[in-house]
View (spheres, rainbow, N blue to C red):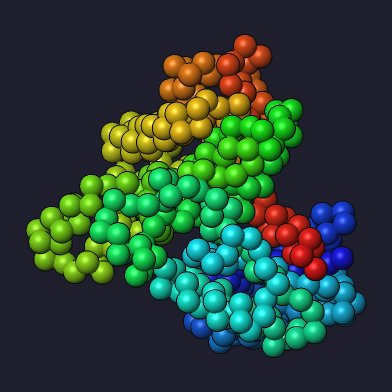
Length: 394
Ligand code: AMP
């Protein structure tokens, strides 16, 4: 079966066409600058194409993607009949969705009720669903939620100590994100470490430009560092992660700015970028740190220290850990960060294998045979996870 995986942002539409039997990616790409001017990056095998083309809305973008997939020269299928289902990434499923679902009109309405929890993402996700449904009304469309995997968290992990009516009236609670990745990587980690997934204690560190850690007990998420929104928890590329909430009012008064403006600062101008003043890209930051930039060194240290603290907390929440995984751009590729973190985990018996840790972007055991907890690098693959979920549901 060919499954098209679609991930829509407000001005982007990322896609992959995946053969669900062989799990091979037949084609992939990204429509950018939708609603502005428009550009499509398209990859099929060794063929890489960049098209400057008008993309006034998501409907036009998806129809251009279909043209490319069926193109006589660059296409990978003969007709749209060869696409058997579409899997859509949805950022926020609130408390309504604890697993993936086949999309109906009622489901779209339910997703819309979660829009206020993710105002930048969910409306764009729904635009993508509508555009794909209009183009391909006969096939099944499946929604796979970033929040679903974390719906197993107990109340003690998801409740904030706020007046309780904010939870009952507005759904203010921890939801957690990157769920597709945490689910995919935790299953694979159990396999790699020779553990029974249903009887294991795992800590998953998804460290990319967005970053979150989860504690997975017996195959279920019991805690995660992102909260009601993806702003909480670790230091990220441009997001602050945890701060004292009183800082918001303090800065608003000092700088004479609104809460909305402060929210933009916390989401877009903080994290590694804000602390270093250099870049939100980890490689730039490392280069600056190596060249002696003090702010870059400090932001590296804050970033690593926060991760170590969360791992320590989840070690206690789980009552120990059978294995730990690093994943996503930084977790899969940065030997330096993995070493800094693993050195910080000596108290729980983690020992790094320096040679193995030189490897990048692949599944590799990073700890020594005598390490009390095995630590693995496990590349994540959210698109494949969405394709698997879609194939399972149809
Ligand atoms: P992601 O959001 O998972 O795509 O991760 C993006 C982040 O991974 C960016 O901050 C990149 O700088 C970082 N990254 C990618 N490759 C490397 C690498 N070889 N070493 C350090 N950081 C990397």
